[in-house]
Every structure is written in structure tokens, then in C-alpha cells.
Image (cartoon, rainbow over all chains, first blue to last red; front, side, top):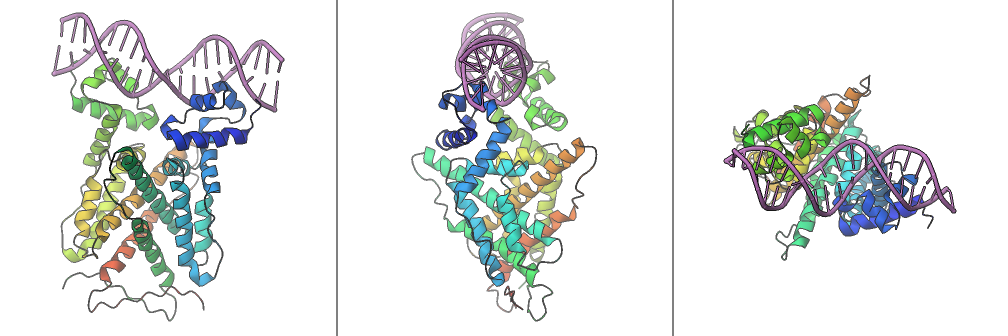
Length: 202
Length: 202
DNA sequence: ACCTGAACACCGTTCAAGT
DNA sequence: ACCTGAACACCGTTCAAGT
């Protein structure tokens, strides 16, 4: 049938979406392509590399955030990048788990991190803080969306949606982190009044 | 040899630490206990449940944070809870990956989340923000430590430590999130001056 | 109560050989 | 270039039977 690498990746994504990450096996994928398992190794060197390619495809199919814009609007663009990543992950079954794994082991899916760094470059953060801030945001989005997708699917399996987790929870948590970053961006900027009291005693 | 459940969990943790999560199989564990694989199912109903028990054991062996203390010192206690969790995870090979998985699928390892909620109860956050803040902190610690442990092990495999990632990176990222939370705690508290400017234009 | 023996239904990967 | 056939070295889990 003369398949190409793109056919393999596209079919793998279809198997992921309809049967889940646990059922995305080389043997299952081969069956779906009407081919013997060994034939897959002509298009892809290993399952690990295939999964990285599928993760990249998930992100490629998702919405593209605005990475450039007015420098002062960087917090809004940070929210946009995070929101686009979340949307991309929620579009395919188990995509959050897949992309989290691929990112954690540094096999690919590095576009979101690069986008976050690009936006943060406009924030004028103190030296060396940008990578830390980008990773913190990435961990938040991946962790939150993994939670969300896991519970969403657990709810879909049962009869009743057990916990009506509001979509705004993502925005709230994200706001926490973005504000923490904004605080660092404003500290030491001349003429910017900043004072945060955390003493709780009445 | 008449093993008990605790022997199985303890040996599983030893296999995890010396051979890694990928090599922690029921068959390997059985061999280590000098027993046939089927014997394990007398002590544990499934591998999933075993992994949850191992994750709990990792946390039980880690340092215990101070959850109670002066109400106003809640940010310091948040840092303590986060730091203890990180320390517990770094103490065993692949523990961050294991605990992340167990937490994500809600199979156990729920103590850190409970501790974070207990501390945040002293922060007097706006209604409903506590669970979101606790999850955000948990995602940060798990994500960061997974990164750290993965790169640590990649460095240990190679000859030279390729990236001298400073330990303070954890504290910096954590500070970002804690400050974001502190901002919410202070907002609307009478007599507390708060002003954060994020307009970046000169 | 704890374990063995044997089986079931799977995995990822390699490699000589075919077209 | 793309694929088959056959094999290698594994998985988690079940279950009747033994002590």
C-alpha cells in the first residue's frame, strides 16, 4: 500500500483519539494500517520517536497564539499562549498525558516553551528569571490540563458528570502564576509603586 | 517464605530505586522476592495498586513539613510543604514520575495536597480559591521535580554533568507562585496597601 | 494463608528475505 | 523503497491445584 511517515503519524493520532494512549501500540497501529508491525520501523525508528511526532502533530493542529504584540501587553499574551496550549491538548484524547511525557523527557513538543520565553522577553524580568518563569507556566498548564482531561474522561465513562469543575478554574490558577511573574517584572522598576503585605494577623 | 504486603511494597521500592520505574515489573519484583509472579496477587490486587502503595511509602519516608504554626507565617509553611515534597521525591530514583502518575490518576499520594490545603486555610483566601491554589502549587512541585530528576539522571548516565542547574531555581519558581497567592490573600484586606503595575512602556 | 504451574492474551524490536 | 515471516525476550493477570 506504500505508506509514508505522515500516514503513520496521522493514523497513530486517530488511534490515540479513539482508543487512548494505553491502546496506542505498534501492533495495534500496524493492524489499523493493514500492515505487519515490523513495517512500521521503516517509517519511524522507535515508538518513542513516534509518540514525539504525534505530540508535535497535536500542537501543530491546535490554535496558534499571538507571540508578538505591544510589549506592555505581555501578560495577556502569556494567557493566550497558555490557553492555546490547553485547547490543543483538550482536542484529543489523552493528549495532555502524551505531551507531558514527551516534554518531561525532552523528546519534542518544545514549541510552547519557546513561545512562553519569546513573550517573557518583553516583560523585562530580572536576569535569569525568564527560563524559570516559562517552566513554571508550562508545568501549570500541563499539570492542570492533565488533571482536567483525566477527570473529564472519568466523568464521560460514568453516567453522571460527578464534579462540575468550572472552566474558569484554569484562568484563576493561571492568573496566580502570571501575577507572581508580573510582581517580579515591576520590582525595581523606577516610579512603579509596589507593596504587598502578607502579614495576616488582625 | 511467607511474605507480607509490607515486604512486597518495600522490595518494590528497592527495585524502583536501583533499576528505575521501567524495570519495576511484577515479574522482576517476584524474582527479587524469590517467588512466582502469581504469588504477588495474594498481597496486592494489581500493579496499579502496588504503585500507589510505593508512592505513599516514598512520601512516608520523606521529611514531614510543619503544617501548623502562626497563621501569618503561612507563606513560609507553604514553602516548607513544597520543599519537603521535593526532598521526598529526589530521595528515590524515578519517584517524581511515579508520584506524578499516581496523583494524576487519583490513586493515592494525596497527603501533599491535603497539607497544602491545610496551610492555605490560614491564608484567608477569597472563597473557593484554596483548592485552585493548592493544585497550582502541587503541579509546580511535581513538574519541576520531574524535570530536575530526569535531567539529574540523564547527567548521571553521561560522563559530564552537562547543565549545572542550580538548586535555587526551585525556590525562585516556588516564590513566583506563592507571591501570586499572597497577592490574592491581601487583596480586599482593609488597610493593606497593594498596587502592582505591569505596564511596561517607558 | 501463601504459593506453584500452566496458561492467556498481549508487548517492542530485529532481521533475513521477498517485490 | 516498502513490506512479510519468523523469531526473541519480554509483559500483567487468572486460576486450579498444592501445602
